[in-house]
Image 1 (cartoon, rainbow, N blue to C red):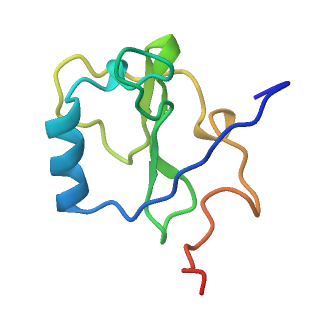
Image 2 (cartoon, rainbow, N blue to C red):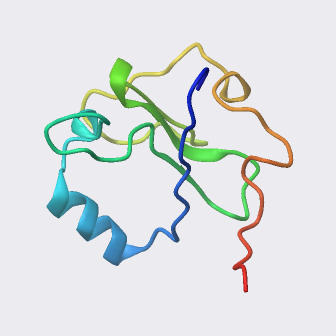
Length: 102
């Protein structure tokens, strides 16, 4: 984000959140802001015990990456030549353990 503020929303992803996401808008490419139905865009999912995210998305460009040891058994998934470290900036501000503020 250059020239204007951006917001980062952090939530604990679980089955309830997955249901809410699917009920709200099941097509990830429609998670855009601004739009008729403003939704957070560029969703990233990570496991707090992993060193890298599981899902990285750039929804306004219709780009999505699943970072996994094995190829997911999902229709339309193909291997990318992009290395995971090219998709995000590892370090103290990314994929750090979540701690609840008091």
